[in-house]
Amino acid sequence: MPALTALLTAALAAGALAGTIPPRIGTTDKGTASLTQVRNPHFVRHGPLALAKAYQKYGAPLPEDLKVAVANIVQKRTTGSVVTTPQQYDVEYLTPVSIGTPAQTLNLDVDTGSSDLWVFSSETPKSEVSGQTVYTPNKSSTAEKLAGATWEITYGDGSSSSGDVYMDKVTVGGLTVSAQAVEAAKQVSDEFTSDSQNDGLLGLAFSTINTVQPTRQKTFFDNAKSALNSPIFTADLKAGKPGHYNFGYIDTGAYTGSITYTPVDNSQGFWMFTSSGYAIGSASFQSTSIEGIADTGTTLLLLPDSVVTAYYKQVSGAKYDSSQGGYVFPCSITLPNFVVGIGSTRITVPAKYINYAPIDSTGRTCFGGVQSDSGIGFAIYGDIALKAAFVVFDGGKTQLGWASK
Ligand SMILES: O=C(c1ccc(-c2ccco2)nc1O)N(Cc1ccccn1)C1CC1
Image 1: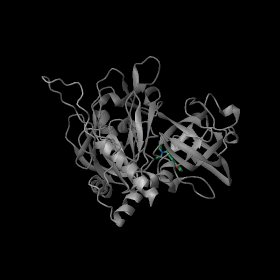
Image 2 (image 1 turned 180 degrees about the vertical axis):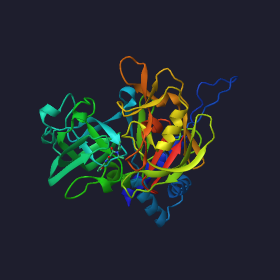
Image 3 (image 1 turned 30 degrees about the vertical axis):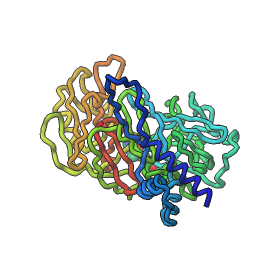
Image 4 (image 1 turned 120 degrees about the vertical axis):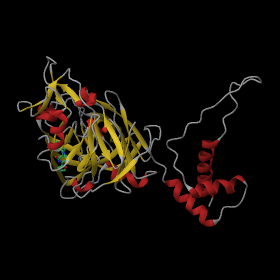
């Protein structure tokens, strides 16, 4: 099987290069040099491949089974990595996504709290478009209308959108899905119209809550999963600066300490987990189970009333302001940190993340990043919490991994 040999050689060469001892650089007889090795974050260990390398290194023939095992491994070598950039006050993070042929690049809000990939389009009424980049399926040679398919979604903040569906090529951070359901908007609510930088959403919750009818469609991650080195994606959001969404691998340089994994209940279609409790400032940790979701599409950290009340009790001048629909406090106040319990691990949300934004141009009164989850039925660990962590969304074991950074 010459093709297999070539494939194997390529794979082994790639693998071998990873381990080559660098040439002696810049050293003299007298001096010494120390070269710091850096782990390759994209490298995924594969036993059979390591064994095959050893056989090849000493010119031993490859046993038939090993040949087949290596051939299978070599196919799964895809990953993706894309930069995601915060808008003002980190209200949302926008990520470039290329759709169609030639590529039409839109900046989408990657949302682990929903499961539709929908975009402003040439079918969105001009009166509802205010600066967004639109997807024009008629200009894409790879677009194919999904006959009879429609979609409609309403979000927790009251915003909504709806339209029809095209299958087209979608690439995120170098990772391509050749046939992704791209939901073209024929209507968007005012909240989306007024968000001029946001060209649509890319949902990464579970495909069970995709809204396309009559046949539900898969998310970008679900479509890509089988080709990835590992069936996972990670969120590394940052305060006031760009972060990354990675697909198929864990960048071990992106976090400190170890990753603590916790089970996910995806029965409602969300990345739902049970936090082990919380702490406010330097007070003792309160061990109490709090069910919530990891939601990159929600800005704030929405928690049970009892926790929110306890938090703002520690903030002098804080009060619930019904005209703002949430807790506010003097912008100059010193806030306590908020600690999220994940098993025995503690993720500290710095106080500065919880001083979310001024309520008006005077800058005297500020809106809290911690607010109530009442009426939702579960907590929402939105960007305020997520930007304090490196989060692994594991679609293989249906679990969430959390690490500090
Ligand atoms: O906005 C949503 C949300 C996302 C997706 C869907 C949906 C309906 C059908 C498919 O998906 N429905 C939502 O409502 N939040 C966050 C939220 C809820 C309430 C207040 C603020 N934030 C869902 C993740 C919890």
